[in-house]
Length: 63
Image (cartoon, rainbow, N blue to C red):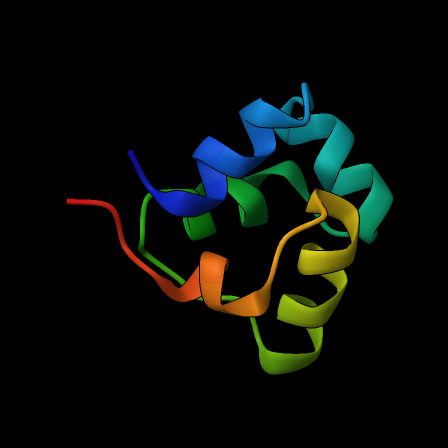
């Protein structure tokens, strides 16, 4: 499972809820979670605040 998805689920957020908080489309979150696209640097900071984690936690891929 991708780190972003794991952290989102840990916070009890749906993709739609996370997208609303970040002011992006749900599809954008889906693409980040499946690895098709990657969030830009400024979005990584926002994600880390919302998910209460370090940016490093978002960058590490689960194997």
